[in-house]
Image 1 (cartoon, rainbow, N blue to C red):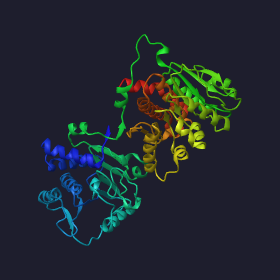
Image 2: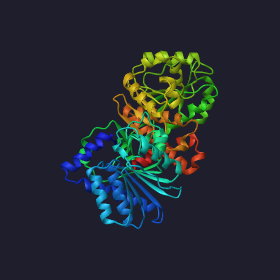
Image 3: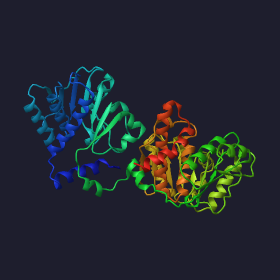
Image 4: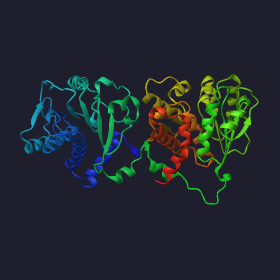
Length: 506
């Protein structure tokens, strides 16, 4: 699913009106119907309700909601802000007149100058139709004070399109207190980038998309830098296996992982790779890992490294299809040197995770030798060690976009909506997975899945999308069995095969 910018959505909206003949008033009515359907499904008409409408088209939506709620038996109190008079958009003015003609008894206040806020208690439902995506600059003066008042009173807040005070795209200067803290955001037609980043997502609350029938033709013709990956997207990319296939058809993968006391990471990555369908897997670990790996993952071959406790050389056979380095390898000086020498000599994309990233952070010049289209999989801490501390998740994503372009690599920035950042500037956000996956070893399983997908011939850009989604879905399946608190990395690995089956049989 494409994630469009505010300007792109406005252009699609204009195309719908000008080319497909849908009147603006009809679109406003569709928004209102969607909002009212959601409200009446959640709350009774006896719930005290206050509606704040701004002077633009977000206000028009809110006024239409007020009219339809009144017809459903609610008794909303409406505040329309028209400071100084003659500030209303034509659509907002028409929505005001329609409301007052249809429901003349409604409690309605048109604020022209001074404003005394109504009493709001936690029992209230507040509908925020102040600005939505029409906001052009940060809130000031009375509007900022109103937003702060609403937030302080603890009522249930439903925002139409966007919480007022927030921009749909980037929010580098966001001040939480000056932005509506929504309980539910009912956004119009498409999700927004700000829904997927931690600092803004917590202010959006639960979000739901209202389909108001904007032009599909215009949307299809509009290029988007950001996408939200769905099961359907992954289903289209996964290949069915032929009846007469053999293990040779699914690649030979090499995994450099483990060190003394960290062999569990190697096991999790190996199990992830095996469950994701790799044809043959060789795990290269120090000598201390032999009996552990051969016992825990007998399906994988083991090749010992010269080091007793740490990996001290990286010299894979030349017939491998894919290679991953990092889970549990530590940051021993000899391990850093082995990684440096290997990356300087190879030109095939590799997967670099966990301690491989920490090794590179100790010697940043190694970044310049990483093969084109290699996949790096940092969590926030690993990313900041590699590329410098970032104050927010938004800043980190911006930096990831910059670094992926500069080094011509893919960066999988792990989190709730894991972001797959490509060197062409496109970002794919993952929609599967949840808090149950915040457990040690979860990322190692992802490394194994990535390794397996590359071994099976998927290009790095496609392998990343498939692997991240399957990893998240496996985590969701594990959570259904074990609950949010009980999931381990082993549970995620055990569900990888089931997750692939689920996607393929969609």
